Length: 261
Image (tube, rainbow, N blue to C red; front, side):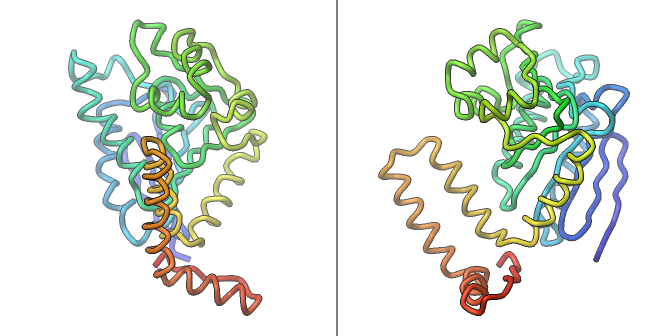
């Protein structure tokens, strides 16, 4: 097993068994986004894209996943400029990354931090965690992808209520609404998240990448267009080594050994 640790000022990056675990690490600020945090997240993107990583896990240090943007640390008076420079590239990167991304929400996920959690392919949460679209409380609109994710996850009626009222959504309610995948007891969350990340890292990750592509495309496609997407991606999938290994393992009644190729 290869394990390595990369320490930055506002995040931690741990690499183990092909899993890259990113811990947002400003606990004294409830892991609110700062300019430096964005810079460090951009700096690790090449690592996350490398063959050394087959699954990404994102969580927060301390009692919060993230409190959104640190308004005292903004380097511009124009929030649109900040989004274009920092948040939008991060969300696009995670959604387009050709490997699974898991978020483990260990506490409050508010504002852009909630957007980050929802940008993951699979979102898990601690039972005491909660989600909050905090933007309306300071006269802003949801950003970093929340106006895209919310109506697709919970429907337009619930999405509008979450955005305009800014009520706290406890983790169990978030699971019931379909906002997230699953809730775990607080002391079990990280163990379950790490087990899932390792399981997915050992799975057919190229196939997972094609699933992401298909799901992302479906959000704006007609049925006919999506059937074409499925045809084309399935054609690619059947040419992968992982597909051949999966069929062989099924036939031989043994566990498959996937390489992500």
